[in-house]
Length: 299
Image 1 (tube, rainbow, N blue to C red):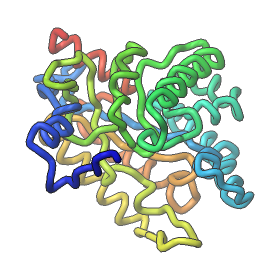
Image 2: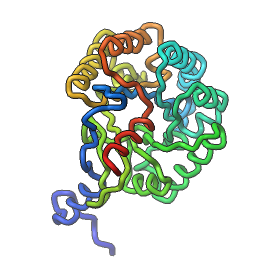
Image 3: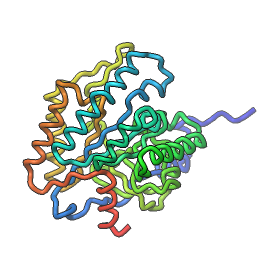
């Protein structure tokens, strides 16, 4: 008979310490000044999940699939038109299945000067996938996005920000410049793996700076949050204002099927207007920011 697994309170120190130290935040990479002498950098990002939110769980709801289609039919055109109007380059994290469903959408994103990053195959949860399968899915996703757009992604945001014990090793195998799935700081930092610097940049995320947590709902579960748009704008604005005060990074995560409704798109429009009122702000893609901080740090 095999020995029963130890419970966490029974773990020896080497067990819990190894788990903690597998992936850690290393040196802070916030530069003294941002590109062109800017005081603050703004990274607008959109997770283009579309129908994969329903597909990844094996869902069959035509209604929820149509919600994903809204992201393509209405959400993405509104976002791209706003980015063009404001002359802002953004980053779009795209599951490979989304790209296969809507290849012309991805080509438009690249043609208009934006970045596309990896976001899983079908928005799968990495910690629920066997390690070998996770590796194969990430590699296949990178090949798929490159084939469709002609540009190989240099960064990853894991679906649902779920980061397994092998995710970092796969990212390093892919030769990625950065990850944007972890939470250990407000500003960019170098990722440490088992005590060793990796040279990979983390552009940290936070649920506070994500539209979905304020607006998403599932009518069949106890998930029915609704924060008034005015309150969401206030939270995002305060996050930017403090980033500006500290000379740091303001990274915002949004979704085409969430932020672009008629009663919500103004949040992004008004936020951009507020940011542009402040002198010395650099709007940049995630790849541009990661490359800049690496260069400044001499990594």
